[in-house]
Length: 340
Ligand SMILES: Cc1ncc(COP(=O)(O)O)c(C=O)c1O
Image 1 (spheres, rainbow, N blue to C red):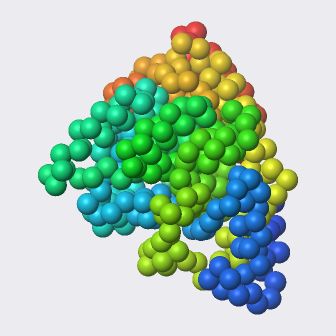
Image 2 (cartoon, helix red, strand yellow):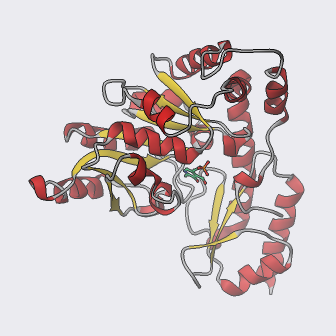
Image 3 (cartoon, rainbow, N blue to C red):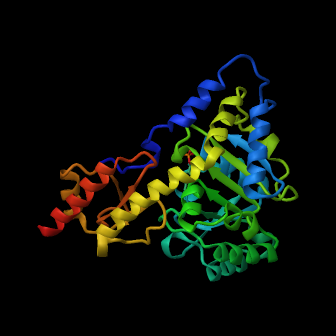
């Protein structure tokens, strides 16, 4: 019953097969290969628009490079207090932007709300004395497993753009968000006003593959050189491209995410009033108290505590390959713990 993280899951067989197929013979290096051209075309089809796709190996690199392209060193990145870029990237956004400041905003379920965004922009408009807000970064699905609806993304994009800021989306779990909404991917991204998207694949079945999708080249024209300088232009680029070809082919990305979401929803239903955030993706947050969490662990449950020491809260992440038996067993453990 390992629900620690979707990073603990293996790579999907379709993706490993694609890597093996890509292993034949010599190919041009540094993204000059045919597979990379095909992946770029697949992304253009997926979002039904012109775009640039820059492939990297980690989500932290995707976020930090996207933000570096969108922010001058004296700028500010406005994000939620619980955003991964704030809490879990070891200062990579600050480092790669050359010193831009992260300005933190609150909001339920780790989502930025429009009022909070307006206030943060106004608070940082003190001329030379403050950093200059340059980009808003939102996470889809959020660090609390919630999904921004298309109109919620559009509302934030409108505020950002009206103030001259760009909108970045950390879409490390974009697949789970699209699967939850049952919508066209463009509705949650370019059509809603997202300028640059970090499109994740690793957590949802890839081995190591993330894409920086630039919808607005006028705002983020320099990703190519920033990626090289950061050491993230992979020389044998065909292997990253092969992962994306398999991931996007025949909607594998959505099938894997839908499966994980559906299993997470079963746990959330069974959790009842223990649920501490809406379950809209493959993450389930429960707050049954420390004693119950201890019982769930004693029954074999593996998960991280959440919400600070002694909060009695936990995060369960359901992976694309999670066994149904794990889910059944965890639900049974919750019932037994509740019964005393
Ligand atoms: C919301 C979010 N963004 C970005 C990342 C970064 O991914 P990586 O660990 O590949 O750098 C993670 C990883 O856990 C994440 O959960």
